[in-house]
Length: 150
Image (tube, rainbow, N blue to C red; front, side, top):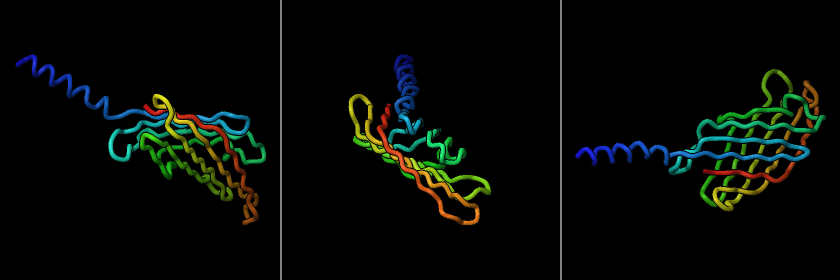
């Protein structure tokens, strides 16, 4: 009976370890440095937890507060993970009383070998140039993104 109870305890303790994993994505080129990390719960929809990310843009014409930005769970606007594809849309607006501006990051990858997902990122930045409602400027960047899902 002790053996059965011990075995059951071990199996139950091991259960939650298989219930979650993680993902990480990155891109680095002359224009963009992007990192994304998150825990992923296994099951319907593979919900994320502890989501975080950072982006650094090299384009000096973009305002500093939009060139270096961090992301949290509330900025993950869309997310898709089904074993064949990993897609994310991350959106964050400028904070404070400055003119409107935002950073939108889209990651679209397809499954490769052993948890690798390879594809593209695209970044759109909108930076309002005048606090009185003047025209804004849009910047677009694209490149290769790689992700790992475990």
